[in-house]
Each structure stands twice: as C-alpha cells, then as structure tokens.
Length: 250
Length: 281
Image (cartoon, rainbow over all chains, first blue to last red; front, side, top):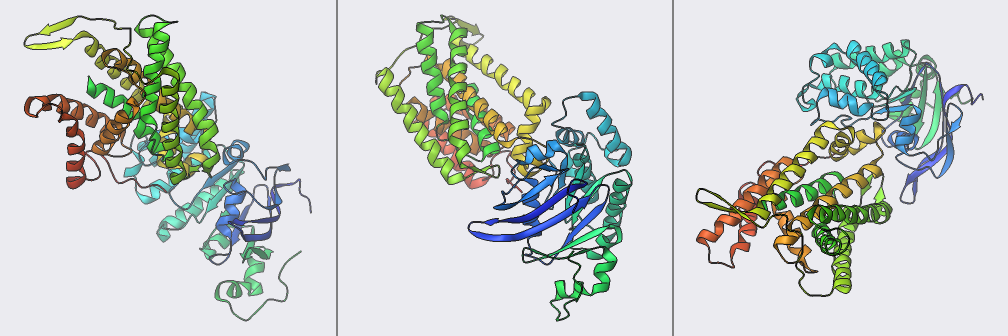
C-alpha cells in the first residue's frame, strides 16, 4: 500500500510491558484530512497503541511512519515538534495555571511570538468562552470548558495529526455532541484525526475509517457502514458466536 | 536571618520534590559545597563576598548538572524518576559529598572571610548585625527573583507544568529531562548560595549539610509539600520562632523548635499550612 501518501503508517507493531506483549503486530493507515477511529474491548491494547505512537513506550518491533518519516524511536517531545498532537483521557491541562498560560505552554516549542499570537487568536475565535476566561485559573473551569481548553492547548502545537484518547469519557451527552461538532470542524479545516473511542455510535457518525482491535491484533478495518453491516461489532464487544465471513482484511 | 536561609533551602527542596518527585537527602550537601566554595575561592582567587557567592553558584550548578544528567537520567522512565531509587541515590550523593569534603579539606572547622559589613545597626531597641541583615536582604532578593522567574518566564511555567501534569507537559513538547535538569540546578544553586551567605557568620565543617537538610525538610513539611509559597511562609515563621525561642527555652534546646513545630503541624494539619493534597495524573 502507498505508505507515502498517508499521514500515519503503523506496521507490524509489537510492544508491551515487563516481558509480556500487549500489541502483537498492529497496523494502521491514516490518510490526510480524514478521521480514523480505533475501537475494541477493554484490554485490547488501544491505550498501549497510543502510548507507542506518541513515544511514551518503545516498541519491540515494527515501525511508525509519520508522513513517510520513521519516528518509531522518537521521544514524545520530538513527535510533538514534528506535528503529532495528543489530548489524553485523564486531564490534559494544568489546573493551577490560567487559561492563557495553559495555551502558552501548548505553544512551548514555538519561538516566534507572532506565530504564537496567531495560534492563540485561532483558539480564542473558535472558543470564545476561553477568551472570556483567559485570566482565570484553569482549575475553576467547568468540565466542558476544560475539554475546550485541552483542545485549545493541543491546537497551539499546530498539529498535523491529532490523536484523541477516549474524548467522550466523563462528558454528558450534550457535551459529547458539542465535542464531536468540534471534531468535524477540525476536519473541515484540514486536520487529520485519530480517535480511540468507546462511544462507538458517536465515532461512527464522523469517522471515515475504523480499525477494530482485539487482543493486540487487528480484527477489522473498514468504513463505519462496512463494519456495521458485517455484524462484527457484536462479536467484538459481546463475544457473540457470529464471526463475519468477510472480515475486511485487505 | 535564619528565615531567609531556610527559605532558600526550603524552596529548593520543594521545587525538586514537586517537579521530580525526588526527596533530595543531599540538599544540605549543596549548601556545604557552597560554603566550602566560598571558603576556598574566597581565600584564594576571588576576594570579597560577591566573588564567594559567584564561585558558590558555579560550583553548585556544576554539581547539579553532573548529578542530574549523569545520575538521575538512568533511573528516569517515561518522564518519571523511580522514587525509591531516587531516594537511595540522593542518600549516596550526600554521603559522597560530605566525605569528599572531609577528605579534601579535613575535619577542622573553617572560618570564612568575606564579611561585607561588620557593623551593627541600632533601630530603637533592636540591635541588628550588619552581616546578618545583608543575608536576609540577599535571600529576599533571590527568592523574589526565583518567584518572578517561575511566574513569568516560559521555562518557569514549564517547571510548574511538569510538576503538575508531566503527561500534558510532554504533550506540549516539553522535554521532561531538560526540565528536571533545570530544576535540580536551581535547587542546588539556591542551597549553594545559602551556604556562601552563611559561611561568614558560622563555621564550616564537612557534616554541616546534614543539619540544613533537616531544616529544609521541616520547612517544607510545615509549609506543605510541593507548595512553594507555603515553604516561604513556613521558612520565615520557623526562623522567627527559633529566634524567639531563646527567650523562654533553656539554651541548647532551641533546636527542638523545628521538630516540635513539625510535629504540631503533622498532628493538626498534616497537609501543611498551605498545602493541598498532591494529586498527580
């Protein structure tokens, strides 16, 4: 397959902790300006996969290519510098700093202050409430506002690939909808997103391609409609005895 | 005066703990290095107090760089330092430095040149010794500079960021190891300056670091672990309490004030005067 056209290519990834392997040969292809999703039951290895992609964990085998460049052994700050951004499950912001300072930290690597100001303006335009509260300590923000701040902080790194780890966790349904509106807006603006999600229905409404993972291995790739039609979902999450004939592995 | 010294020590240890989650048993030894640097260079190359302080800064930052880059990095995984290994490491460093100083300079007490003023000032009923006042002023200035740096500079913000949420800091492109290095150097230099400052008013001996490590801990426990302003307030309170204690305590027992205060705090307000419970993701 064309590995140079994709923003992200993961090939044959093997990784784990202390002697055991959690990932056993994972592959991913993420095309530019698309939304890709990763789904799978608990323990499938989704968080581990993200950790390896981001550089928090070194793979034992396999490669990670970012726009064709091998970044498999880069440290996290190096990957951020290259344009991979990340908003995590647990809080991805700094409660004791103000909103403005949080954003400033997001732009830590950018030395040029006018570029920083431009990015900050972009974030404030998109999230007017953050501008209102720019001097406020982040610990006092509401849950939804914190999520916006985290996206804002992430956008300050001017990312080429945005990785979201279970973004709808802890959010009310209304906030989830608002969040995914933002996701769609980001894609419209040209961004590329890779989202790990438990909220499969919501993810399917925005994603172009889905990768289903189980026990550290790929089980299915395809568009959301292909996945739904194949009946694979019930197997994946409920362990039903229906194993789809066409499992979409190309 | 002692409040000022305790402040420098307390801030340093609080910073190192907050950012690196390492209990730096060797913190007092940085003060020892500073004091001996002041002695050595004060007598030979640089004359005068400013030179002594500068040499203390140079020596302790050098030591800090070596320790942080060569000794802490191997035990750092995914941006965090293994806490048990860190403790053992700093214990080893403290013994190493104390004994190295012993080997090089001998066990004798050294007195130090470099008093800037030797006069006394009289304000009404109070008698203030010039040198001690200078120490207080110097430590206030340095503390102010530090707080300013932490609040307004990017790297100061980065230090606070790493202390609060290392994962988000990494996700913002901050190089955690580099921030650890910076923090440790700052902590060491603060202690070194404290050493250079007090050397003229007290004697220097190889094991002097140990007492000061203790004082530093007392200060941060009273003030709240990881809270810088708490450490500041606690330091000055402790200093004042210690000085006042000579009024009502039999002399020789005033070193007990520190542990007593610490005990009181742990019983009634364990998270310190201004501490919050330290949650880290």
